[in-house]
Length: 335
Ligand SMILES: Nc1ncnc2c1ncn2[C@@H]1O[C@H](COP(=O)(O)OP(=O)(O)OP(=O)(O)O)[C@@H](O)[C@H]1O
Ligand SMILES: [Mg+2]
Image 1 (cartoon, rainbow, N blue to C red):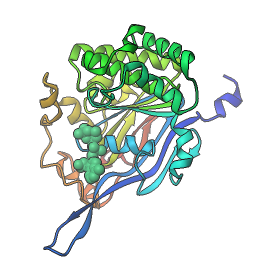
Image 2 (image 1 turned 90 degrees about the horizontal axis):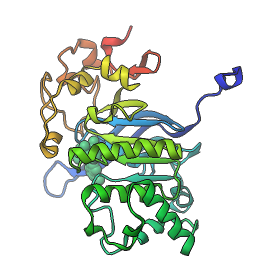
Image 3 (image 1 turned 180 degrees about the vertical axis):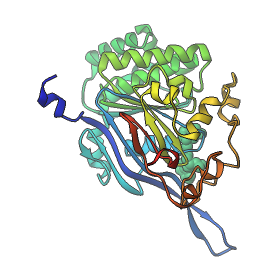
Image 4 (image 1 turned 120 degrees about the vertical axis):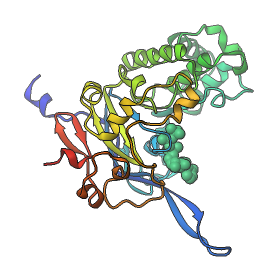
């Protein structure tokens, strides 16, 4: 590598700077008095995803993963902070100005049963992004649809069929095809495999790997299951109650976890049933998960942490780099 290349920072496709997404909820008080409280779903996240990178976002149910994913795509309006896509500040763009950017950033949802329009043929569903973004119509669009079906491992003739004719795994392939057909730069895949059988999960993971290589896709892969993401992620970010508490390469995070929460997640024994799996108990942790409306003074994990010290209850730790590419927000690791 020459010196200029070494000094050029990687180009960032998606970026969050002190991002907050708080949902107002009506609450408290007696009739007639409605104090507004907030679910602090995303509560100060810094994240930078470089071109071509696959970042896995993991954490327990309700920690804010989907909220963060939606905020990165400006499907939600941030409460505070900044989101950028492909170098552009999305934070305050109007819907009209966002529309042309939508081609470049797509989302794959968890549930392949509700994410496809049941009344549209697969071919129409897949051609829609091409039409909406003024890319192709007619025969050209049909050819592109056939190509993308091939890429995701389906026969071209499935274009003539309807979603109900397919299995969950096939539908998820179609949903993924729809997300990538207009060649986006960035895809947020929100638990794209958790509704699928274990055997099918592995195939869809392989498909994401293949798409990344083929289209040099950049993506954020959301999962509540750490083990699933190990071999597809270039980087793993662990989220707890609205914050990223640890991030690093998969080998560092899996083999040398630093945050007590990451260690507890890794120690949790997987349960084969995906529904129960989502709500499994995490061994080794004390106390209950605090309410997501809590305004924390110290570390948000302190109430469950087996190693909590005085400082943890008083001061909020920020993500600090411990070794190259591996950072943690934990007083145990601060000088
Ligand atoms: N539209 C909304 N209005 C109010 N609260 C919301 C809304 N969406 C999410 N929440 C709350 O925000 C918090 C974070 O939710 P989110 O769906 O982002 O978590 P998650 O990590 O994706 O969970 P899961 O693994 O179950 O999908 C939760 O407490 C949730 O109840
Ligand atoms: Mg979610």
